[in-house]
Amino acid sequence: MRSRDFPDRDGRSELGFGGPGHFTAELRVSHGLRDADPALRAERAEEFRAECERLVDGLAARWGEPFEHGLQGIRLRTGKGEIPEPWAGFGTAVAHACVWEPSADGRWAAAGVADLDPSDEIRLLLVVTEVPLP
Image (spheres, rainbow, N blue to C red):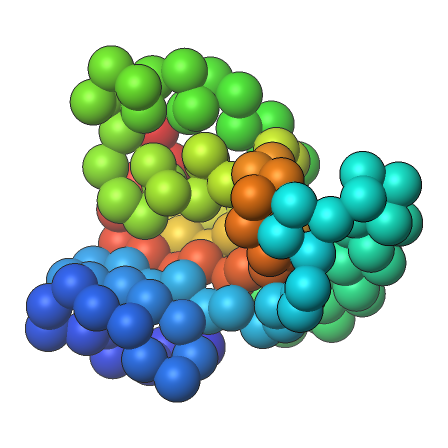
């Protein structure tokens, strides 16, 4: 994932979405949780977070230990138009992420659970980008 080519233009693929310099893989997507009962949604979100922790553990063995990063500042600055993609979209959907600093090729990576919008499905996301973390 970290070494794959980025898309030439913005758009979706079977694995997720991206554009020049970035790609976001949707590793798991819930079904039927848009506007679902808040208790059920919270339960499923916990399952996604547990899966994200397992993913991070596996990736840490390959990429090194990530750092935890709260994305509230990114959400606030996105509203002002200060944050580039993929961080703008990732930050508005994900509360906390595990972030890996750039590899030798200059690529950042981040994993998190997109569960902030109750009118959307819950998604386990993995971002790879050349765009520095704001």
